[in-house]
Image 1 (tube, rainbow, N blue to C red):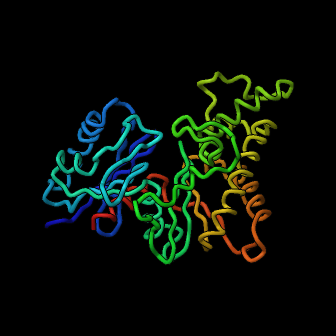
Image 2: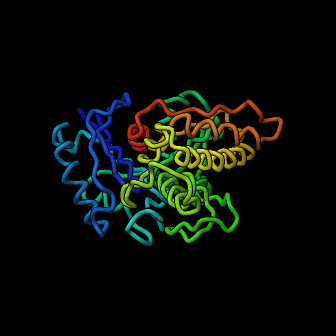
Length: 317
């Protein structure tokens, strides 16, 4: 029984999720670690090994594995490196594929984390059989994968499709990780929702809100969602503002790739219609006539972690 399983790893800005995947695309076991718990990449790999090695042993040892696939921010498919990732502690160029191969003894391939999620979506999820779509991950940051004619867009250097860093507000909010001002990620991420909430609480001191009872540490996107569900006016304004910016950006993205569908997933999508309604409205209002009412926005039907793990594992089959 050789090469029966693959390992899929999804490196996110907050958590790194990983699992053992069989040839049919079933995740047999999975776990997670904190991505930035360690200051060095070597420490990260040791944290990963502590959880992953027992899994490998459970499924018959290293000889039963074809390799490791990883999705990570700013991952270069061609070079096997993570390069200048804004949301990770490890700065500069990290030879991650080489380091993982040395540690685990398995061939390692990698791509952008959002590209890995798009591959998982295309093979197992809402866009199965679809050849033209965009996937947008709304998590700690904003990731994206663009599929045109059935192929992930990588560009000449492997970094194409970084839609989260497209400027959507001229001289807008500072993104501390990149130094850019006004990028989509600064607004339409979980971090962006928190920043918008803080700004609105400060800008409208006269407006009552349940959110004022939260400490700064407690003001998360999830907390804003819970308050919005309770009818909090300011919390609802936060999602309306966020969805409007996201919808305007999606209208721009549609112009260059003409997707059949845009798939959204990630923690922020748990807000449901609070986010989706203003997003769809703003998107349609900013589309050329030829695109109006022709591009669907759908939420992923895969578990948030599963899409990226599955897509990453598919890199090595």
